[in-house]
Image: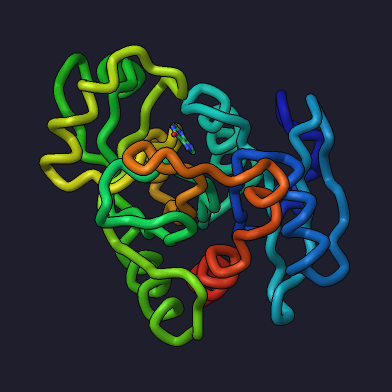
Length: 236
Ligand code: HPA
């Protein structure tokens, strides 16, 4: 048992899918894994282990934002020897280059967060995806018949969902950021520090240019393409 995860050593697989929403973790476990078993419900942040195509895979809720995500990622890496984390999340489109329900495989992430500023003494670190996972995810996407369009590009990991400074994202969009979410920059930084593999795959659930949105139920259930890509990439 770690501070925030009530699992025994060995209960968690070396591969973890990492949605923000604990109910999406449950939905993934029930719909994609065989023999899934709940290993933790501390603070309602559900975690399950099962198998996918015969390989052990866990799925753990991370909560929203870098501070919550970092608690779970740090404990998974340092106390459960997790080797691979694939975030499967939602994001808000920042440009008309991406459409609703498109899938974004993040090769890197910019951020407005203060976390890395403290970590790197005010200097700028470039959080990037693990290349083997990135390549495997692109190959998986190319091998599947998908409803969604798939993009490889930059995410903007914001500390605020309800920002009053939307103009601050403009230079990031001008330099390639496709969508905003709240976790990826921190996850890539922690994976690098622990010398483990991480990748973020996000589905566009709302759009800051067109102002379209999905319902909570659609968000929970319409992300099958992304989960399929993530499972194939993580087990490749
Ligand atoms: N902002 C931040 N995070 C998000 C968004 C958003 O619009 N959509 C999904 N995650």
